[in-house]
Length: 446
Ligand code: ADP
Image (tube, rainbow, N blue to C red; front, side, top):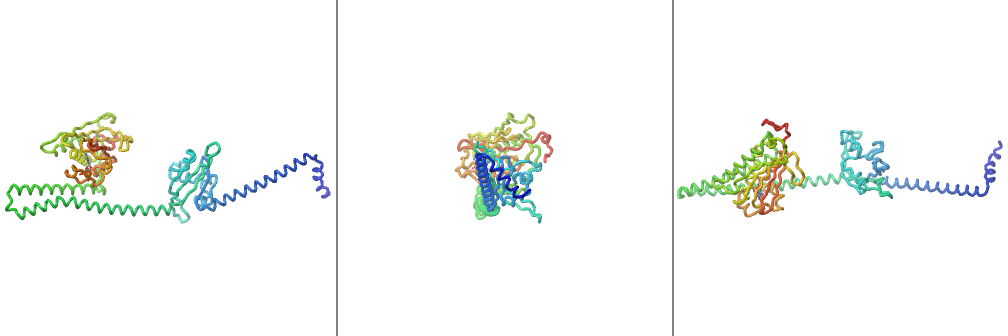
């Protein structure tokens, strides 16, 4: 066929078309050209938008409502690698799988994405990300702040979430270094304070011993026998006090450094409480007051339905020590007409009101002077004594409750107090109940 004939054929066909059809064809061509231009503009805008996000040093990504990764900028890909999960899932899914041996499939713990998807609010988390080992086998832990923002659609739903990550490793390193330095400085301050308190406490009985001994030496012949005996008695009392202080200090230090640990065995709390009460009543001396008749109650309600539920794994010497301290305080800070009771029962609620299942609770309650709300939080601190006329009058080192707290902690339990001025106090000591299998007999449990 003649090429010139072939070229002319379509022209001939078009020109043969009716005018209105020709017009419509022209309009369609113009529309197609417009769409083509728009498409080219949109493509240019989209790649421009991606170039903008790629220029940002911080990793940014967009995920769908089911956490599929829809977009990741260059920084994100550089950090988490293009091969991560085939880029189908957000990187924290991989982190979750690293953390959970069972290969959990879901966002990592503390992930802010669910908050943005379901809560339709911005989410935030600061997390450590263990970067996989490089060619040199070195792993690096970096700290990231993750900020997530929901993109809410016209129906009020969230179909996408934007996440921006910020590497705060250096700031975090600096913050931790400063915190460590502060802690060291605080520890030094506490040590100095401790030395000051200890020296002061030791000095008072020592001064008394030196004073009486010096007077005895100087005036031995001139002093009547009765006075000499009085001085010797004062020396013995001050020496006893010194011994108590040193014993207490030693005990506190051993408990804190871990050089004594509880020797757990099956201990009947009621028996130990009864012995502690007898000893406290005996310490009251020849003229016991009402406060020295200490009542013991055992509450079976809510307790395990076994006869031996009051037998728990505990260090009997430590338990006795804690009860001695609590009873000594109760008697010391309660007027003569007051009352002291000891209750053994199943623990209901802890200091924060949360239920304490599997715990036995010993409550030492008194109707004494009580403790103000602002002092209540501090009485378990070492050497803390509430400064009142009474505490100035009665002997005390401020270590008894700190020792009780440490003993409770070493048993996996806790101690707290409820009190109000002039309304008495209740000290709660909660200790874990032993599992039935471990409670039989008196054989050591651990
Ligand atoms: P202390 O040797 O001074 O009694 P503790 O550590 O046993 O030291 O107690 C610390 C402080 O808590 C006491 O100085 C006292 O102010 C207060 N405290 C302890 N138990 C009671 C109580 N049952 N009633 C009132 N105050 C108490």
